[in-house]
Image (cartoon, rainbow, N blue to C red; front, side, top):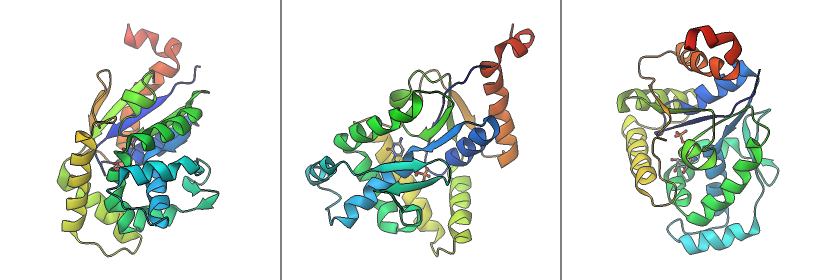
Length: 232
Ligand code: CDP
């Protein structure tokens, strides 16, 4: 059996990370949440009092090369060795600023360097916005995930409420729509479907059924001998 890399891209809050995490668990692969790395860098900028609209100041600050590590044992983000998972998910300043920080070319260059360190040995499932187009253009399987805006708002609201956060439906919707717009329209590595990716609308799928659907595409790529009679 060979080991492959799997790229999962798509819009905000459509379940990319859940799918990527479940796939990695089922295949015994490493899950990397690239969005957590952008959130971690945004948290770092906020802590240094940087104006989020000042791309020059952000670029200058990251010359310090802060350590940004996605720990695939805990699935938490470590910034300079400190676990900042709660801050990057729940701090509304991070949530509302991350797409500005992610549009800065220096930020993308720095994180691309770190993200590509993970993929050399194969067996990686990474989710984000530019994974199939820029970070792992050679990934053996690329999935572009979508879901209706109503379903995405519902899922994110459930997730935040489960964590005891008090946010309104309108706030969640506005944030998802604005991040999608910013991510799809920036000039540096915009969110777009890789030409050779599988488009997957998860709106009516349960967590288990979406995992099964993508595993059924991944398995023949991992073990072609076994599936040859079916794909000829
Ligand atoms: O979980 P959710 O889909 O809401 O977002 P995320 O994956 O944690 O990503 C947060 C933000 O980071 C996105 O809205 C993008 O602005 C940025 N991002 C990016 O530009 N490129 C990536 N590969 C991953 C995230």
